[in-house]
Image (cartoon, rainbow, N blue to C red; front, side, top):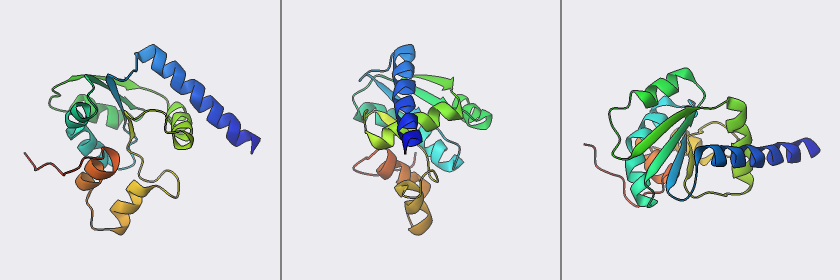
Length: 151
């Protein structure tokens, strides 16, 4: 129990550090690509500009720890907004996610976890329903009211 609370406290500190170092405020969307489902990560990138607009932000920070996911983000054709990509450790992402699950402290922070924690609704939607990855990203991660048409 004490270990869990220490992890949560460390997550809070990790977020505060990341926020200060990267100038995270209400004008910046933060997308954490986890690599658990590459198609979910790809759709999260595809609809990132729309999420930035919906959140009335101006720019985005993409965080990832796996090399192939960093390459996926760096290779994405184009963004309409200013987008920065940064490598962070898996440990730091796990700590921040633990803190985020406890206290939803930022409305502009999005994670693409599909398997982390047993009660993860994104993963359950994909596995147990006919909702595909695109729809899951639009509805469960970004909370769009409608699913955009393919372009």
